Length: 364
Ligand SMILES: C[S@@+](CC[C@H](N)C(=O)[O-])C[C@H]1O[C@@H](n2cnc3c(N)ncnc32)[C@H](O)[C@@H]1O
Image (cartoon, rainbow, N blue to C red; front, side, top):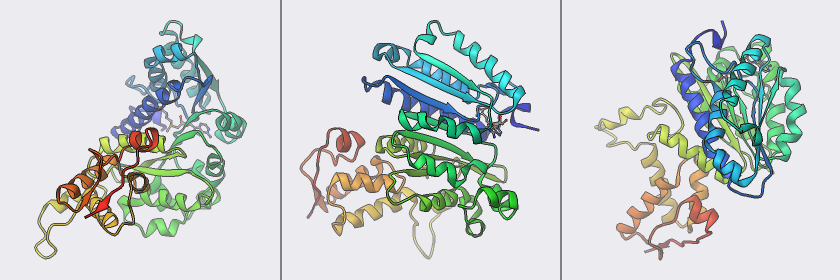
């Protein structure tokens, strides 16, 4: 049975929502720059368009997100090229008819959006389209069924890009279970299966992402972030990749909105609900955000971090959002541990990277 013989399950819907929300954040970022002529979106494993119950899949959601931005796209005279690929012949035909129908519902859309369809194996299509991915601002979706295409050869290519954001899907717990098989080993020589097996089962997708991070060359600016998804006993996940801080900020803002407890899973990955109970011997344990604030506090007090620039970079490196550090700085100011001259500690993307405001934190 394949995915489109049945309705999308709850986890798939969360994944699709993440894909769609990221597109919603990504499209205006490039459209509003005003000087770009074209930007590209690739859905390499596009499916049929809808599930059995008529719930929209990734290609339809992408078309909807583009249509939402039509005013700005027209005004800025930019073209969006949406590349949709599906290998299975029957699914491909459904994809073409459902996406074309959705596309035609919007009058005049052909003036600013081009739809390109492919019925090819990702293995041959990716290298062919790679020059476009590399040359233009691109958003790449890799919603594969298993894990095969997470292999080093594709990640190495994506590492070369400078204005590409990508979202990979991976059935992470499958590698833990079947990783010793020849079929897996052949494709995923970049993954240490033993290490995955020794990892807490719930954290297998996090560990997979950490392993892939270690393979990134030291000269590359590529950053990877996981979002784990639990479905029954399986752990899946999305791996987000980008080289630009603005992209990282957008992705982390989304994931922390999805889950304010841990920001990287659709479930209680660190078992934090148990922390609410007071531990008689160890006292109150800290949750993920509180522990992070504690680390920030130490780094400010020992002056490892002295400015809002250093602080925001530290925030993103650790998969947090500016708000967590801002709260910590305000608390420290109130407690008269530090002082800073501005009204706010300015740990935001806008202050640091756009307005380039520098705030020094002075220890009292
Ligand atoms: C997880 S589904 C994608 C679902 C889609 N994003 C949606 O929202 O409906 C993966 C799709 O990739 C297709 N596929 C499998 N192997 C492929 C390959 N080598 N190249 C391209 N597509 C492939 C499958 O037929 C399947 O429809």
